[in-house]
Amino acid sequence: MLKKGGMNDENILVFMYDDIALAEDNPKPGVIINKPDGKDVYKGVPKDYIKDDVNAANLHAVILGNNSALSGGSGKVLHSGPNDHVFIYYTDHGATGLIGMPVGDPVYAKDLVHAFINLFIKIIYMSMFEGLLPNKESSYATYCPGQVHVPPEYHTCLGDLYSLSWMEDCDAEDLQTETLAKQYELVRKRTNASHVMEYGDMSHRQDVLSTYIGRAPAANPSYTSLPSKTPPHRAQGLLANSTLTSFTSCSRFKLLFHGAPTGSQKKLEAQKQLLDEISQREHADCSVKKIGELLFGNEMASKALMNVRPLGKPLVDDWDCFKTLVSPSLGTYERRCGGLSRYGRNNTRAIANICNAGTSMEKMDAA
Figure (tube, rainbow, N blue to C red):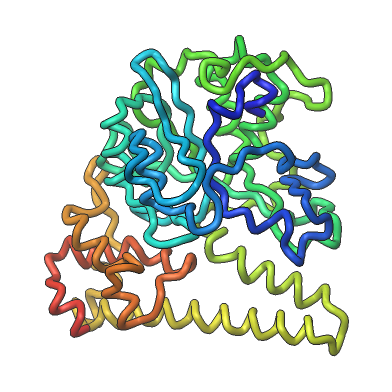
């Protein structure tokens, strides 16, 4: 999409783990699609940071233009001046207060906002920034094939509704005339399973899309303008972001299990993976529930753990406490309860509330 808009590789920075195109389960090796019958979106994409180089430290270094802080990768960083426009698109599993990385620690809201402020980026921000930026509260919906006719050889979700919506809109509209405000309204209406919100400096709402993603030709004839609502056959496959985090792995293992020949080794492996995933989720929920009961008592635990702070207040006051509990490298939770998986991140609000209650590390460790 960016190349179609006239951007060169030198102006595009890509982080991707790069484990899809040549994965054993990919029925078309070397090809990645993001919707049924979609075109290849992999060929020609620059790969600046892949595998273990896709980590929080490198992301922060790239945003801040700090070459010396990089570890691996192409070495490409932002060299933006006061008159440049920077567009950042980030997709991964996230949770309250953080977004995931495939390697190492997650990216924490406070750290990412700090990087943005240092770079003087004033654009539309994504979720997780409650109390850290003006105009709060957001999430985005995720689409996983339901009754959409996905080729049977694909045992996975092909794309999320929020991402597909804004990208398909870019393909359908004239980027030199459509504004951020117009696209936001179209995408918000289509992404109808959760709240798509705006953050930051609202004066940029009238900027045209070409300001950020290039001057693509108007109205690609292979696309039509977005419907105001998701078609009914797609809506049944729509999942809110928190639901997706809970759903994706199990869905994949179920698809693999049902698609494997009866009595085959693949069927046995998929069954084991599914049962292991369910067991890990039960353990994660039980662990947090038990910790809450030990810290707050049986009657108050649920209320204390699930408390939502008033609009405008940040998720947590003591980010060091939050990081110490959820970080894979610091490992207070991991040391006692096992790793905080993508599903386990559903409990980050509970962990934040433990910190907000003034719980000491000694008490948490004992619990």
